[in-house]
Image (tube, rainbow, N blue to C red; front, side, top):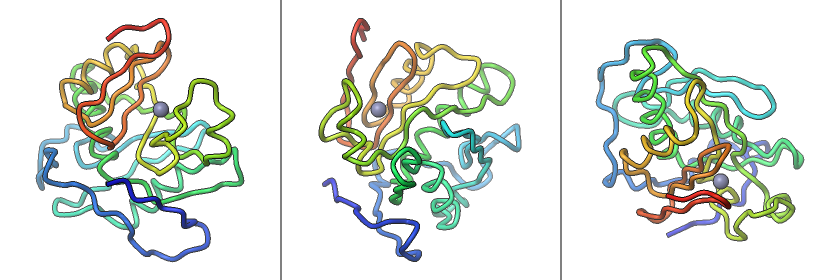
Length: 192
Ligand SMILES: [Zn+2]
């Protein structure tokens, strides 16, 4: 079930409003190999479209770290619409960390995630051409991003191999979300 999270991170306290579907996806184990400090199955190295960058460990081996989730949720905020923010479904961090770590291993070096779009208010989402009306971006469960050193085709293939829930293939970026599993689609001019 998609539960709408309308509260604002900037005004509310640390009420943790998300229950992720932990059973459906392989979470990193404590001490799982991470060859670098920036990148690993339990952490993210990520920059948003405002140029803010975080290297942060969101999974402590047993659970998602609430402070890290809060900081990442702020990174995800809609800075183009009054810094509106919601808590992001932390399963999304696991998806992205797995993609980032596997491709970084292939590259032999840590590769940063450059996020084009994270949380979007419905108002701003409505102004974006081609954006779905009931977008997972609007409930804090999606990310459009690139991984440095890799074309979107490679990111799409890895995300597909890792069986993320929702996956969209676009010419200039990849969309990943934590919605209903098995959804795959291609943007205009693209094929799966
Ligand atoms: Zn998207």
